[in-house]
Image 1 (cartoon, rainbow, N blue to C red):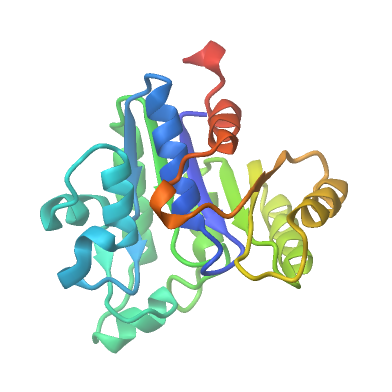
Image 2 (image 1 turned 90 degrees about the vertical axis):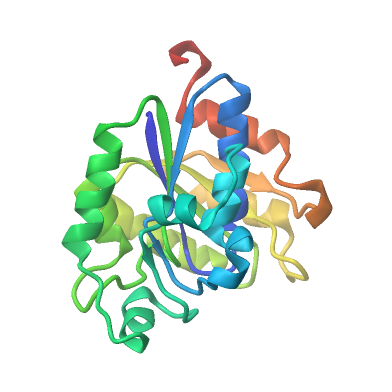
Length: 232
Protein backbone atom coordinates (compact mmCIF):
# COMPACT_ATOMS: atom_id res chain seq x y z
CA UNK A 1 0.00 0.00 0.00
CA UNK A 2 1.43 3.36 -0.98
CA UNK A 3 -1.89 5.18 -0.68
CA UNK A 4 -4.17 4.85 2.34
CA UNK A 5 -7.45 6.58 3.17
CA UNK A 6 -8.06 7.36 6.84
CA UNK A 7 -11.78 7.43 7.63
CA UNK A 8 -13.87 7.00 10.76
CA UNK A 9 -17.14 5.73 12.15
CA UNK A 10 -18.13 9.32 12.93
CA UNK A 11 -16.83 12.67 14.10
CA UNK A 12 -14.71 13.44 17.17
CA UNK A 13 -13.14 9.98 17.46
CA UNK A 14 -9.53 11.04 16.77
CA UNK A 15 -9.28 10.59 13.00
CA UNK A 16 -6.87 13.49 12.49
CA UNK A 17 -4.79 12.46 15.50
CA UNK A 18 -4.37 8.99 13.98
CA UNK A 19 -3.59 10.45 10.55
CA UNK A 20 -0.88 12.67 12.03
CA UNK A 21 0.65 9.81 13.97
CA UNK A 22 0.70 7.62 10.86
CA UNK A 23 2.35 10.38 8.82
CA UNK A 24 5.08 10.85 11.42
CA UNK A 25 5.67 7.10 11.73
CA UNK A 26 5.99 6.72 7.96
CA UNK A 27 8.41 9.65 7.80
CA UNK A 28 10.50 8.10 10.58
CA UNK A 29 10.87 5.05 8.30
CA UNK A 30 12.39 7.24 5.63
CA UNK A 31 9.31 7.44 3.43
CA UNK A 32 8.46 10.58 1.50
CA UNK A 33 4.87 11.30 2.55
CA UNK A 34 2.22 13.43 0.87
CA UNK A 35 -0.99 14.39 2.67
CA UNK A 36 -4.44 15.22 1.37
CA UNK A 37 -7.62 16.36 3.08
CA UNK A 38 -9.70 16.86 -0.07
CA UNK A 39 -12.91 17.94 1.68
CA UNK A 40 -13.04 19.81 4.98
CA UNK A 41 -15.98 21.40 6.74
CA UNK A 42 -15.67 23.50 9.87
CA UNK A 43 -12.71 25.35 8.32
CA UNK A 44 -11.96 28.79 9.77
CA UNK A 45 -9.29 30.57 7.68
CA UNK A 46 -8.40 32.66 10.74
CA UNK A 47 -7.33 29.47 12.52
CA UNK A 48 -6.00 27.61 9.51
CA UNK A 49 -2.96 26.16 11.30
CA UNK A 50 -5.23 24.33 13.75
CA UNK A 51 -7.51 22.93 11.07
CA UNK A 52 -7.38 19.25 10.20
CA UNK A 53 -5.53 20.03 6.97
CA UNK A 54 -3.15 22.39 8.77
CA UNK A 55 -2.33 19.79 11.41
CA UNK A 56 -1.70 17.12 8.77
CA UNK A 57 0.61 19.39 6.83
CA UNK A 58 2.52 20.33 9.99
CA UNK A 59 2.88 16.64 10.91
CA UNK A 60 4.53 16.19 7.53
CA UNK A 61 7.13 18.80 8.42
CA UNK A 62 5.67 21.55 6.23
CA UNK A 63 4.45 25.03 7.11
CA UNK A 64 0.62 25.06 7.07
CA UNK A 65 0.15 28.26 5.09
CA UNK A 66 -3.22 29.07 3.53
CA UNK A 67 -1.70 28.40 0.11
CA UNK A 68 -0.39 24.98 1.17
CA UNK A 69 -3.72 24.12 2.81
CA UNK A 70 -5.59 25.11 -0.35
CA UNK A 71 -3.44 22.70 -2.35
CA UNK A 72 -4.12 19.80 0.03
CA UNK A 73 -7.74 20.65 0.84
CA UNK A 74 -9.36 22.41 -2.11
CA UNK A 75 -12.97 21.81 -1.02
CA UNK A 76 -13.24 23.79 2.22
CA UNK A 77 -16.35 25.07 3.99
CA UNK A 78 -16.76 27.02 7.22
CA UNK A 79 -19.84 25.43 8.78
CA UNK A 80 -19.06 22.38 10.99
CA UNK A 81 -21.69 20.25 9.23
CA UNK A 82 -21.88 17.33 6.83
CA UNK A 83 -20.07 18.51 3.66
CA UNK A 84 -23.15 18.85 1.45
CA UNK A 85 -24.93 20.90 4.14
CA UNK A 86 -21.85 23.02 4.85
CA UNK A 87 -21.53 23.79 1.14
CA UNK A 88 -25.22 24.67 0.94
CA UNK A 89 -24.78 27.22 3.77
CA UNK A 90 -22.39 29.08 1.45
CA UNK A 91 -24.65 28.82 -1.58
CA UNK A 92 -22.40 26.18 -3.10
CA UNK A 93 -22.50 22.49 -3.88
CA UNK A 94 -19.84 19.78 -3.93
CA UNK A 95 -19.06 18.15 -7.26
CA UNK A 96 -18.19 14.64 -6.07
CA UNK A 97 -16.74 13.83 -9.50
CA UNK A 98 -14.37 16.79 -9.11
CA UNK A 99 -13.28 15.48 -5.69
CA UNK A 100 -12.56 12.06 -7.22
CA UNK A 101 -10.68 13.63 -10.14
CA UNK A 102 -8.58 15.77 -7.79
CA UNK A 103 -7.59 12.77 -5.68
CA UNK A 104 -6.85 10.58 -8.70
CA UNK A 105 -4.61 13.23 -10.22
CA UNK A 106 -2.64 13.66 -7.01
CA UNK A 107 -2.39 9.90 -6.51
CA UNK A 108 -1.10 9.43 -10.05
CA UNK A 109 1.70 11.96 -9.50
CA UNK A 110 2.73 10.98 -5.97
CA UNK A 111 6.41 10.32 -5.39
CA UNK A 112 6.05 7.72 -2.63
CA UNK A 113 3.42 7.33 0.10
CA UNK A 114 0.17 9.28 0.33
CA UNK A 115 -2.14 9.60 3.34
CA UNK A 116 -5.62 10.86 2.49
CA UNK A 117 -7.87 11.88 5.36
CA UNK A 118 -11.62 11.85 4.80
CA UNK A 119 -14.23 14.21 6.17
CA UNK A 120 -16.54 13.16 9.01
CA UNK A 121 -17.50 9.51 9.07
CA UNK A 122 -17.30 6.94 6.30
CA UNK A 123 -20.99 7.45 5.47
CA UNK A 124 -20.91 11.27 5.59
CA UNK A 125 -22.72 12.70 2.51
CA UNK A 126 -20.62 14.56 -0.05
CA UNK A 127 -23.63 15.54 -2.14
CA UNK A 128 -27.26 14.48 -2.38
CA UNK A 129 -26.41 11.00 -3.70
CA UNK A 130 -22.84 10.10 -2.74
CA UNK A 131 -20.97 9.62 0.52
CA UNK A 132 -17.36 9.31 1.64
CA UNK A 133 -17.51 5.56 1.05
CA UNK A 134 -18.36 6.24 -2.60
CA UNK A 135 -15.23 8.39 -2.86
CA UNK A 136 -13.08 5.61 -1.39
CA UNK A 137 -14.61 3.03 -3.75
CA UNK A 138 -13.91 5.30 -6.73
CA UNK A 139 -10.27 5.66 -5.65
CA UNK A 140 -9.85 1.95 -4.95
CA UNK A 141 -7.46 2.44 -2.03
CA UNK A 142 -7.27 0.67 1.36
CA UNK A 143 -8.80 2.18 4.46
CA UNK A 144 -7.73 2.77 8.05
CA UNK A 145 -10.96 3.01 10.03
CA UNK A 146 -10.80 5.04 13.26
CA UNK A 147 -13.38 4.53 15.98
CA UNK A 148 -13.79 5.24 19.69
CA UNK A 149 -14.36 3.30 22.90
CA UNK A 150 -17.70 4.89 23.77
CA UNK A 151 -20.95 3.05 24.46
CA UNK A 152 -22.35 2.08 21.05
CA UNK A 153 -19.02 1.99 19.25
CA UNK A 154 -19.24 -1.76 18.59
CA UNK A 155 -22.47 -1.38 16.63
CA UNK A 156 -21.19 1.69 14.76
CA UNK A 157 -17.86 0.07 13.89
CA UNK A 158 -19.22 -3.30 12.85
CA UNK A 159 -21.85 -1.57 10.70
CA UNK A 160 -19.12 0.49 9.02
CA UNK A 161 -17.04 -2.64 8.44
CA UNK A 162 -20.04 -4.43 6.96
CA UNK A 163 -20.63 -1.56 4.55
CA UNK A 164 -16.95 -1.50 3.61
CA UNK A 165 -16.85 -5.24 2.96
CA UNK A 166 -20.04 -5.12 0.90
CA UNK A 167 -18.55 -2.33 -1.21
CA UNK A 168 -15.37 -4.34 -1.79
CA UNK A 169 -13.04 -2.13 0.23
CA UNK A 170 -9.83 -3.36 1.81
CA UNK A 171 -9.59 -2.43 5.50
CA UNK A 172 -5.93 -2.14 6.42
CA UNK A 173 -6.71 -1.73 10.12
CA UNK A 174 -9.21 -0.53 12.67
CA UNK A 175 -7.81 1.88 15.26
CA UNK A 176 -9.80 2.12 18.49
CA UNK A 177 -8.97 5.56 19.89
CA UNK A 178 -9.84 5.78 23.56
CA UNK A 179 -12.80 8.08 24.19
CA UNK A 180 -12.21 10.63 27.01
CA UNK A 181 -14.49 9.87 29.94
CA UNK A 182 -15.88 6.80 28.20
CA UNK A 183 -17.72 4.23 30.30
CA UNK A 184 -16.34 1.28 28.33
CA UNK A 185 -12.82 -0.01 29.01
CA UNK A 186 -10.47 0.23 26.03
CA UNK A 187 -9.26 -3.36 26.42
CA UNK A 188 -12.83 -4.69 26.51
CA UNK A 189 -13.69 -2.78 23.35
CA UNK A 190 -10.54 -4.08 21.67
CA UNK A 191 -11.21 -7.72 22.57
CA UNK A 192 -14.80 -7.65 21.35
CA UNK A 193 -13.85 -5.77 18.18
CA UNK A 194 -11.19 -8.35 17.36
CA UNK A 195 -13.76 -11.12 17.77
CA UNK A 196 -16.13 -9.63 15.21
CA UNK A 197 -13.71 -7.88 12.82
CA UNK A 198 -13.28 -10.94 10.56
CA UNK A 199 -9.49 -10.95 10.56
CA UNK A 200 -9.01 -7.19 10.18
CA UNK A 201 -6.15 -5.97 12.42
CA UNK A 202 -7.54 -4.00 15.37
CA UNK A 203 -5.21 -1.64 17.26
CA UNK A 204 -5.91 0.12 20.56
CA UNK A 205 -4.73 3.70 21.01
CA UNK A 206 -4.82 4.95 24.63
CA UNK A 207 -5.77 8.59 25.16
CA UNK A 208 -2.61 10.69 25.20
CA UNK A 209 -2.13 14.14 26.73
CA UNK A 210 -2.47 16.87 24.11
CA UNK A 211 1.01 18.19 24.85
CA UNK A 212 2.58 14.81 24.06
CA UNK A 213 1.49 14.91 20.42
CA UNK A 214 0.61 11.90 18.27
CA UNK A 215 3.48 9.71 19.46
CA UNK A 216 2.75 6.12 20.43
CA UNK A 217 4.03 2.66 19.53
CA UNK A 218 0.69 1.87 17.92
CA UNK A 219 1.58 4.23 15.07
CA UNK A 220 4.69 2.19 14.27
CA UNK A 221 2.48 -0.88 14.16
CA UNK A 222 0.01 0.91 11.92
CA UNK A 223 2.81 2.11 9.60
CA UNK A 224 4.04 -1.48 9.33
CA UNK A 225 0.57 -2.61 8.28
CA UNK A 226 0.30 0.16 5.71
CA UNK A 227 3.88 0.02 4.37
CA UNK A 228 5.81 -3.06 5.57
CA UNK A 229 9.49 -2.38 6.20
CA UNK A 230 10.47 -4.96 3.59
CA UNK A 231 8.69 -2.86 0.98
CA UNK A 232 10.29 0.40 2.07
